[in-house]
Length: 140
Image (cartoon, rainbow, N blue to C red):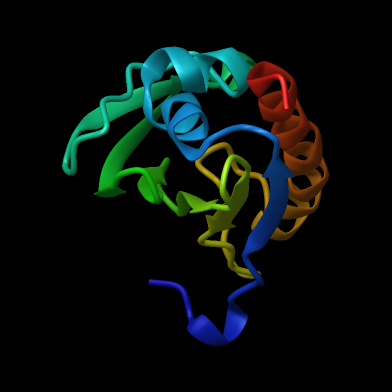
């Protein structure tokens, strides 16, 4: 188990979309929605559901849904270390969307042998573009 003293900060991306919360929820909590802006998958928004993300060159990534609170919050374990959480807040016709990617440790490596610290830097930049892709998908 990793030492919490070596924990790195979560990656957080927050964006306000000009779309109702139900539309954003459908985009983050269904297989079709998540596939459109993130990765192909067989997600079902059911706590305990095990599914896979098709991570392209990195292969199939095992995941498990850990929290479903429609239409406000969905969390799942991703691979051996990470948790991905989508938080939604209704702003009356608009939606504040926050993505939280947690589970980063200075002294750990991914299942592919890459240091967390290096991957975290790449992912932080990558999430900016991915969240923008969600906005495009929503037409927001």
